[in-house]
Image (cartoon, rainbow, N blue to C red):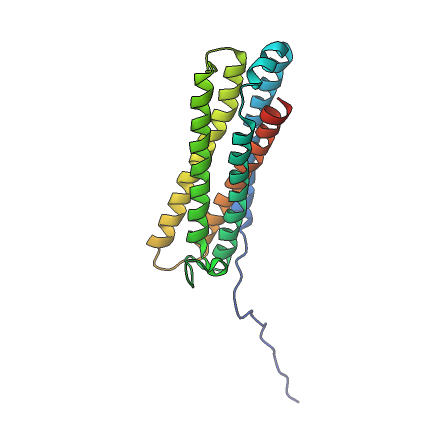
Length: 212
């Protein structure tokens, strides 16, 4: 009587499993960042509750359509970032087709587009600051100026940090002899940070530009 043993089947194309330790560490760190922004929101609401007349006058100087376009660009960058993550999970660092064949783009192309959109947002925010300063709204002008520039300014610094991370990930993809799970994991963690930055801005936009 003979017996046969069957070896466990393996998938033809290995999939990338997100490491739990990296995910947990990233979530814990982002939680601390969330608490930081919660403090900024609390400051903003406290000052607004004690300076209602000032808030009504100063928020009238905000350019809502301009901020809305800037917001749409930043939110859209989350989708391009996620497309880059999908490419990284497939271990595809660069495009496999023509430049206009978006379905065959790799991680570097999607992350490069995300970088451009994030840079557009920062440039737009800088222009908005210049317009508000011309309207005599500055960091030291009054309570509203302090609250506005502190909340949006710290968020802008986080966006710049994300842009630097994208440059690092793109550079590593080009420098690596072989794009593997280590490089893909870095791309995934960076996307966590970028999505967090986008969600925080949605909250800031609703509070500052919509609710005023």
